[in-house]
Image (cartoon, rainbow, N blue to C red; front, side, top):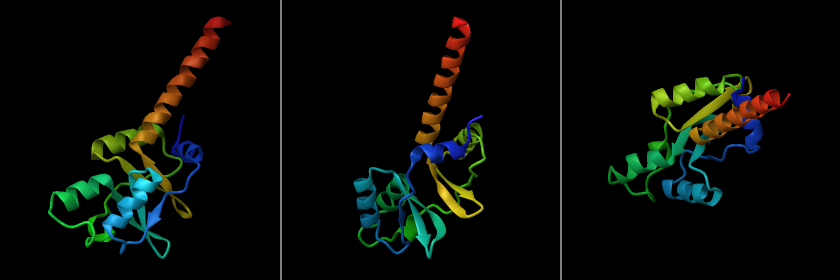
Length: 142
């Protein structure tokens, strides 16, 4: 059974974080520089939410706000469900599909452990399928 812990281990990258008072323009530039679609919003090392490209398009562009004067805190998502490293990939896929979200925070006993994306889930499912195919091929060849 594949879990969120495996995804975080393979990512080998801590989530990129920003302060809530950062402008949306600066956060978007950071996201572009890092080639990522979301940033974690932290204040004093405490998790506040996540800002995504979807937040930007729906809460800035469509509302006629200005990226240079809008802060991350004004548009970040704060109501996302969270998971733990021990949760299964299947559970995450179901949760993300049900809630129509692309990013989800992962918390362990120490706090924020990482962020997983729908892309991470899809990659993990492909890896699971490759493992299954490899095992079946080995079984057939015996």
